[in-house]
Length: 151
Image 1: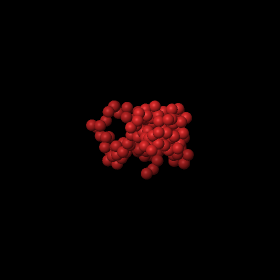
Image 2 (image 1 turned 90 degrees about the horizontal axis):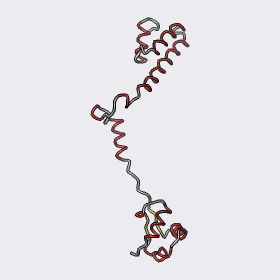
Image 3 (image 1 turned 90 degrees about the vertical axis):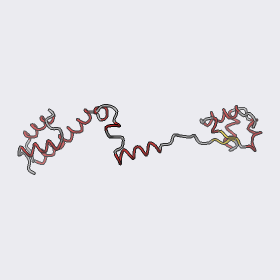
Image 4 (image 1 turned 30 degrees about the horizontal axis):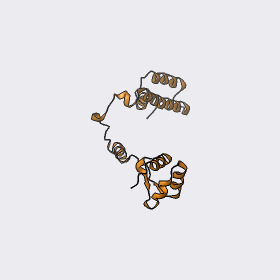
């Protein structure tokens, strides 16, 4: 096999692939040997006399399997697999925002439907802001126990 390092390097650079992804067809080796400029090499690539193989990527199969197992079986989510504290895995502030928005939306709905009056709405709104209720279910239970809503 003749030394065609220059042509291989130019072809790889033009096609943005590695040197091992450049193949020369044996019947056109003389033409490839004569190609000394980028333009010559580019022309040979277009004519199919120099073959550029596709870039090899990284297989995603292991990642897909891991994601599926986490979603379906809960693998990698138990205590032995956890790295980082509770707040590192799910931010406390973000969780608070989600919780308080649910509670406020629920209170707004009750007020607009006429289930509670505006003073009760305001009282429970302030209590929610103060962190009295740990969840929407807790807020509902408190409203029921105090007889503010039925059911």
